Length: 151
Image (tube, rainbow, N blue to C red; front, side, top):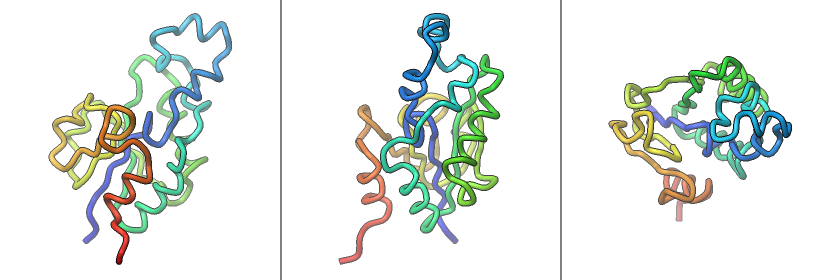
């Protein structure tokens, strides 16, 4: 039986800042300080460097899911996140998207997340904290940790 890995979207698979950078000036001003509430912002975002290949590699070795939160006040976020997954990850992520505000309710071995919010800090498996705040700064370090190279 394969171990279960959950991968967060925003800040891990998805470059949130790239969506902010693509906002119209009007939306950037209107939603300043609460960009995740901007309609369609999640459809504008680019993948993080090496995220797509890394996700696919994880799928070869683990039972891999995407575990993300959909902002409560953004009416397009649910669909935008689903469409992003379909566009960038395709079949390897088919029916593998879980949207929740309580990540700790999911059972698994690893959670790759850039933050400890929304229950990530209470996840029963191992939290692999990704990005500038974490011990894993980029995808290569995550892959090298989870899939050690054979000598």
